[in-house]
Structure formats: C-alpha cells, structure tokens
Image (cartoon, rainbow, N blue to C red):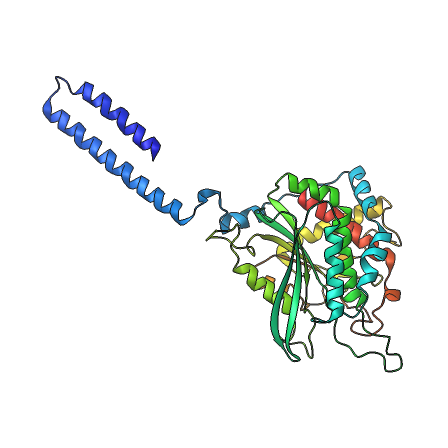
Length: 392
C-alpha cells in the first residue's frame, strides 16, 4: 500500500507540470486515467489488508500443498565411509541395554503404577540430554472394556517451531496377560513388545545428542519428534475400538492442532514428513519388509545403510550384507499404531518383523530371548537413516 501511495504522488506532481499550456481535453483524459489508477491501487490495498487480517503471518505460513511438495522433494544427506563409521561408533550398546532397556522390563499396563514408573524413566533420559527436547505428557481418558482408563502418550519435539517433522514412534504399554500360575513373579514384560523399540529410540536420541543440538540451533526446516504411544494393546480382543488408544487420540489431536500456531491452513499432522514406527524388535534374524509403495525410497535407504555398515564391518553377528530389510518378501499388512496416521495421509515406514517372533504375546517375551547384537545393529542402521534424513 505504501508503494502505491508514493507512486500516485509522483504521478500527480508530474501531471501538474505537464498540463500547463496543454489541451484541456487531454488534461481531462489524464485526470480520468489517474483516477482509475487510484481506484485500482485502493482496491488492491483493501484486498491485501483483508488477506493479512485473516492470516497474521501472511505468506510466511506454510500451505498444505507446499508441505507435501517439500516432503516429496526432500533430499537427505549421504554419509561418507568415515562419517558412517564415526556415527555408528556413537551408538553405545551398554547404555542401550543397561540404562535404557532394563528399567522398562516391568508390567506397564495403562493407568497403573508400572506405567507411571516407565514414563518417568523415559522422560528423565530425555531431560538428561543437551539437545533440549520439548517434552509433553499427553493425558486423556478413554472408555475400554475394563471401564474408563487414563492413558498417557509421551511426546518429545526437538524444535516445535520447525515447519516439518520426522516422527520416530513406538508404544510403551504392555498387554494384560495373566502371570504364570506356578510363579506369580513371572509376569508379561513385553521385551520386544515394545520395550526394546522404546530403548532403541532413547539410544538414538542419546547417540545423536550433539548433532541434534546443532540441528536445533540451525533452525532447520525439518525437526525430529519422538512419540511413545500408550494403549496400543487391546484390553480384551483386538477391535477398532479396543486397540490403538494412544495413536487414535494423537492422530486426531494433531489433525486439529494448527501448525504453526495461528495458522488456518496447515496442521501438525500435515507437518509430518514420515512416521517411522518400531514394534516387536529384539529377536534374532528379523525379517522386515516394506508395506507401502509411497515410502519405498525410504525403505531402500534402510537397505543401503545395512549393506554399507556390513561392508565396513560395523555390524556384529551379521553374516550377509542384507539380513534384516528385504523387498523380496511380503506377508501382508499388520494392524499397529501407524493406522490412524496412515488413514489421514501420513507416509509410514512400519518396522516390524513378519512373521512375528515365536514368543509374541507370551510370558517368554523377556530379556533373555532378545538378541543383543541384532538390537545394536538395528540401532546403528537407524542412526544412519535419521542422521542422513535430517542432514546432521
């Protein structure tokens, strides 16, 4: 508007000089022309004012179409051999197992003391890091076959103001399974389902701490979010209403949350580049396949990372260059926490072994059945994937 005002004044001054001694009819034509220009400028100014009043941040706010375009055109970094070796070395197997995993190996049914204990453990591990995570306990109450239950999703965001997000997720609850009738202390601790995935995500945050801190300071367009869902397991039999309590709640909440704050065009859900969901990890020789064509290029990067680390001798108990991530098998889809996000258009990488481990949903899903080298290898592969995606 200010530009149009300055332009009109200049034209008006020049016109006063040009009209002296000119044909009156020509002067009238010029005045009419100037009047039309003024009307046009005022109309443009009114339209601009209405637009700015409707969207305070103007063109700086992302549009859903732009978010999709940026997501599809996203180009990750590619680490050199030396960089990959250094990054893989930052994964600490002892810290993963002793510090992150073992405190999680208790019953942690939603709404119980066990759930509260492991939630505080997860939060304390993230608070101890230098990256400066923004943490939230997302509490909500939902009706279940056991009555109303309070659930708590744990959310950690590196830079809440970043336009786009890479989500790493797992569930922290354990299924209700009766204790061993011969030994009441033998209870279901869900080592692979899903304590190990939680520990892997915590170790990724720890191993990449310095790089993530630098990323946050750079105000990158893409940030990292960690999600620990509550209530993935059914209380009785798996149905659309008795399962996925936490992910159903969070997907709905994110779809209704403007991002950035005040936007009327885009939501937190639309800001998600990719949801990487981990589940049932920990057994030896997992077969992990790609479930979705639209994320095939990201699955290919997991395959490539596995091959590269194998060739560099950075994976242990790993006899062939491609053991975990395979594109030549497919055993069908799996219901899991990704479904509420998938149904809303979020791209998904579902990292779950198929077939499931033989001890799935039994009291044998314990630490002793986990294969430590495999868990550490998967963490190294994911560290490369995350670091390259975010260009750390």
